[in-house]
Length: 133
Image 1 (spheres, rainbow, N blue to C red):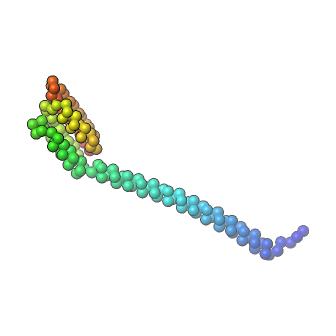
Image 2 (cartoon, rainbow, N blue to C red):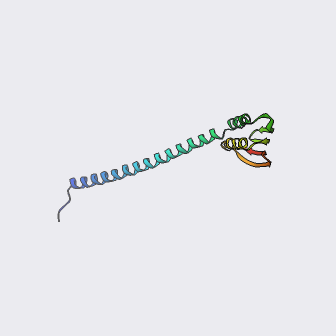
Image 3 (cartoon, one colour):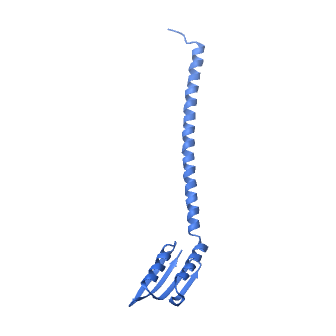
């Protein structure tokens, strides 16, 4: 039986340290990559939330809903009230083209319809709408 020399013991311990260092650095790199992916996902979520906040900002929506008055003739507007985050719109004697244009522009805004009633009187239409944002 052969005796193990000190050099072989030192080489064996060195090899164990080298292998354990390799696995340590490999696990740290994989953890770092995983954390960087998580951070980039969080950044995307935050930027998306900020974009939604800009879209749903109340002042801009108020102005855009108020801008819809210009689509209509003043004789057709019976009530047009905007308060904070709600709007009440009542229109009378509209033709089909005008009511369609108004509803398309209103539905393109980020508003939620509470009520939308359209009544026809022959070729003219009356509309009542409540919406919020």
